[in-house]
Image (cartoon, rainbow, N blue to C red; front, side, top):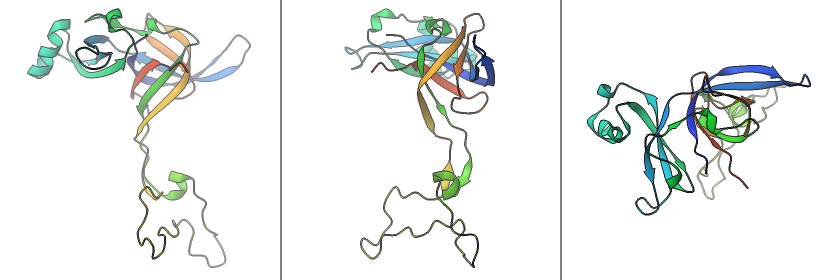
Length: 209
């Protein structure tokens, strides 16, 4: 089973195909990623590989992280993430990962943190309709009734109301790769992905249904 990696969002642009059709694309640049731990059903209860990313000077890390990374060399990493795999024996400690594991036309899952939009009302946050704007109406952008009467005499959990919008974990399940540059470690994917510039994204193969 193919393992994924972590990349940063460089930005968006547009490209043309052979027929002249224009596509909006997002450029993703992967940093240095190394397998720092291999987990199996016998030792951990499931098969997975732990990937270290975001380089950091080894002397800037605490003692426990330095000890964890000691078995893959003297390179320091600040963050870790996991990918489930079918057979952990296909991988080895310290193995470097790059965009060469992906191919043009492949579908991938992209996970990241969406852009935070601050505190928003019902119209913006939940696409509610507004009230009438004329004839003395005092209900323009108010939420309206939120209770359910004397019974049960409370507001139901999960009621859609004003609140903080965005800044949440989002996964796009079938993003297509349009271009792979192994020299620069760059992926170009079709359409948009979560987050703003320099957002860290988790890239992994799409699940086969």
